[in-house]
Length: 448
Image (cartoon, rainbow, N blue to C red; front, side, top):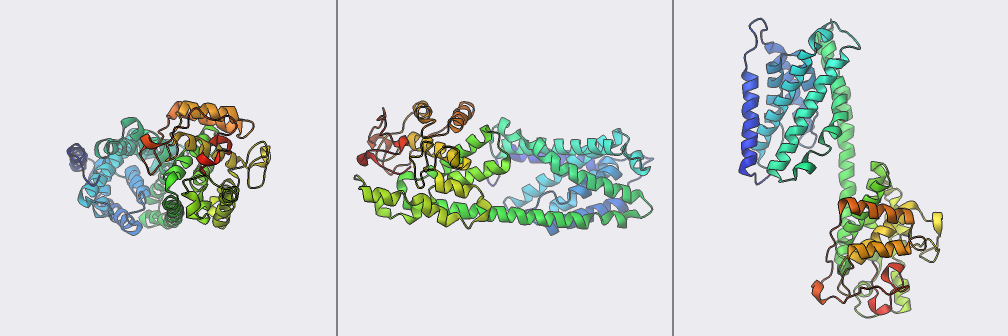
């Protein structure tokens, strides 16, 4: 959004203009504007935004939702504006981003307040009438979440040119869970506000939420540090072994596709992506002259290169967040028939993560053009994987990759330092001596 297209600027202007109209819309004469509550909520909301900083989005949502449950829609929408306009922004243009955030939040809060009032929520909060009060509050959270998701997707389409299907996919469902928690906190604030204890008691809901936000921010920072560590290791491998530049990232993507097709949970999918990305990190321990050697490898040189899984495992075994990815780094060259390396494991003794990465690694090696041979077509590579399933590869992982590629497709890449047209053709494959079998003739040998 740094170079903002005109259509995106028009969208921001339209959202901000609509928010202004809703905020300035006069209340019915019988319903005076509760300015004291508006100012208190707006001040608390702005304080939450400033305290959380630019990296923590949504810290003021319990306050906004409490305002939506307690105040008339125009007054509730007004609560969101000061905090959004004063919030820290890391990326430029800062002013446009603040205006967008203010307009988006105001519209979402207005919609939540409107739905809550239409469902009889104010009377349920005043009573308080539990568990009935949960129903209009839940409807208000749904309205808030829907407006936020629609506007988030719209700005992705207009500003970042993300395809519409991808821009809105999962936005509503991903945000619904966290917003439901914020909604419960907002409902608690609203009930305490109307109770004999008053607004001061309502604000006591915020400190526990602040601790939760802090813990979540710490987790996000730790995750960012993990990604930076992995990125640095992969960049080092790519610099050292120019023949396979980009290979690690693609193996990570293929491993992730297999893991998702197998129905693994999100945490394991992420771990297997890390495994694919780091599977060749042990090349940092292999002499560069061997990785870049143009001629045939001697048996001794091949034995040195085949030590790279053990080197890689030594490098990453102290990184606890990698979990089972460490086993994949060590065992991704094992074969189901026990003829692989480094330990000659067979069948189910090979860790599942290693069996996933082995298929992803071989597939990308076959479909990427290198300086010493052309890429195989995707269909031909998949056929070769099926042929080797049961002997070298786990048939379940091969099937998962085939199904995933049918659904998502694949974009092979040239990873050589020379143009693809100068590469040596390598299709059709040699039978038992093919690269996928790990027994390539020396003249063609490169470690995938």
